[in-house]
Amino acid sequence: MVSAACICSITYFKTNKFLIWICHIQITIATEVSLFYDHRILPLNCPAAKVISLYKKQHHLISKMSSLFPAANSPQRHSAQAATKRSKVSLQPGHSLMDWIRLTKSGVDLRGTGPRLLEVTLEELNKHNKPEDSWIALKGYVYNVTRYCNYHPGGQAELMKGAGKDATNIFNKVHRWVNFESMLQACLVGRLVENTSFSSKKQLSLPPHSNTLSLNLASDLATSSTQLLVNVSDSNTEVSDKVIMTWNQSNTDVHVTWSMNGTSLSKYDLVCNIHDAGRLFQGEIYLENEVLMIGLELKEQVKKEISVTHNSLNNSIMVTLEKFAADKKWSILGSAMQSHCQSIPRSLHNHRYYLSHLISKTAITHDTCLYHFKLPDSCYMCVPVGYHVYLQADIGEICISRPYTIVVPDLCNVNSELLLDGRNLFMMIKAYNDGAFTSNVKNLREGDTLSISTYEGTFSISMLSLYQNVLMLCGGTGFTPMIRILHYCLHKSKKTVQLAFYNKTVEDILWMDKLSTLCMQFSGRFSIRHVLSQPGKEWNGEKGRIALAHLQDMLNACQDNVLVLVCGPMPFTEQALRYLSELGVNSNSIFTFT
Ligand code: NAD
Image (cartoon, protein in one colour):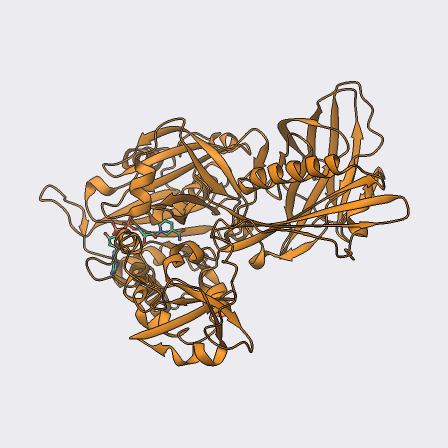
């Protein structure tokens, strides 16, 4: 399901004893490029056959890595406090994503420059800045977006802000998670260059999405190889100034433990996996504002299943790796890959994707199902409350990612959170009739696979500790980010929650029966207000959309100490924010999932 492109360069250099071989793999899935380095040390008189076999091995590694290192990043959702906002416009009929896919496959010349790729100077790019002739540069490549403008979910005006320019920065701020390489492949004009003349005949390399494998067996001396050769042998290794890694072994297992100086690591903070037939351990530790990369080439092979435990006494996380060869004593844990110990700001961190299996699909309403996915046994990821992951699929050869919040499968069961054990994930997904992506998801059957990204989000459960009351304003599936928060507030705290749930029809209300059960179970602490915008005749409850008077009523019941959570269609959220502002609610006490 995952489409990837790899560019690999292999370099080697000699010391007086060894030939050091370095493989640098660049994998692009979705919008971002992931880098992977591998190295081997060969005897100086290494026979050619060995080098060829190594090349084959690296090549195999590349194909393996393609399914393990996808990357698409992300700020799809922002808190009310976050700076960037994404807005959607209503597209004209005939301009859906599916229509765009059809157009790109129709053979229509969307480049407008013929089949050969061009080198485009900034000067030339600047000339194409009008709606009837707009080019845009993204990450070094130039696209003719004249025809795409009307299909752009953010509207033509938004896209035109980047016309005739290098729009990489704007793009990164607004939606780095979108796979534009795939989406705009048919519009590719060429590469952005500094001074070369327009229309050069020089053969150009395609951007990373284009299934090109360019292998450069250069004899240049590699310069920064030392980092690759650091053995992780110490039993107590400082991974950064904040994180400490220790390891030990029994006859059957290797245990690697991470802890932090002065603060704690929770079960959510480590995401990791084993790959390359049990030889590579990769992961990241999510710190407050940064992500610390972990990349170890293990000394010996381990079995693929990974097990992670959180020690709440010393707030450390321990990964247990089962030795492939039991009883074999490891002299060292392994070697650090170049990415090891690198710290990346959270906002710039690339997602990795895991090919996951659909375990079950349960109907919740006429158009919404609860999906239970399972990550591979070689992965571990516990998604924090209020966070989402991306599902990724190829639709008509275009790689598309969509965000979905992780939910608990049962609101009424006090132990539901335990099911989110680092491997099992639950999402509620509404299928839209014209939804290119959701109709694909709807057709998944048990056992089918789909790529699931590492998580992201900005909500912090600790925010709740400041408030006794929580007011949830939800429009339609905007209820999904509230599910785990509601579960926490009712089952794990003594907070009072009011849920104002705005839907079109009674058939659209998610988990209506479970919500009623909770109301009875937590009477006095939990209340619901259902409001329908397209009610049937039989509906006796409230009608209409979000209204100032509703909010006033609910806020009056909270005596000021209230956190307001908002999620739904964008106009709904904007309306809610306007009313809350009119009612004098402090913006610090509002969190929007957008
Ligand atoms: P929907 O179209 O069925 O609408 C649900 C209700 O929202 C309506 O009944 C109405 O009361 C209200 N509403 C809709 N348009 C409105 C408007 N213009 N002004 C005021 N109120 C309006 O909802 P849906 O199809 O379930 O879509 C839910 C939305 O929530 C989607 O846009 C989705 O992207 C968003 N969502 C966001 C997150 C997140 O975490 N950011 C999670 C889930 C859903």
